[in-house]
Image (cartoon, rainbow, N blue to C red; front, side, top):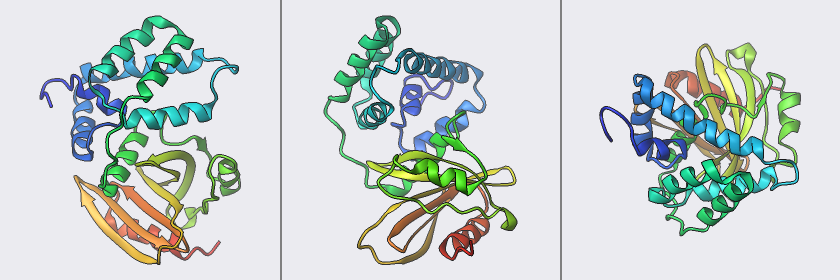
Length: 249
């Protein structure tokens, strides 16, 4: 990765195609490089323009979520650059066709590094405007929001009395697995709680891992797989895990 500017790695960072370690390097670089931040903002604006331009008669949100997942698995090289240039001038419908054609390119093998995938999801969520799809501290608002969007109903609890305030939720992916992401806030720290069904798996006590200053906890309980990830202290993360495993609400 270029020490002065991210260059082509910026496209891969935006599309979540960097390894967890390289994504951390890019995240750190963006904090000190105004030029790369401006270029990243321009790329985001291009994507937003395409999304806003597609009217209600065009492909559905579910279509674009499926398409987005396909793009994450595609070869990022020169096709990304060509797609960005073509989409800028082609108009919304042509751009959608280009996206579909690109999505059909051969996919990379899925990653076996589940911790890296979870960390990448956390870093992706920290980009402006990506942390929540539904923002609310009311679990009776957040839980119904997931209905019809996932084939399972995630448990949604608030522990504001214990120092972990529910901030909202969103849909996300860990590898090819669609997951519910519950967002908690403790002080200045955002905590992602990722959960999805784990049918047939036995209960497993929380296991901790630390990478580049981020702590992750994983456990299985009552047929659900859980991951917590944040830059908060591991002891605090363990405390939230204990609350989620034995809720009193």
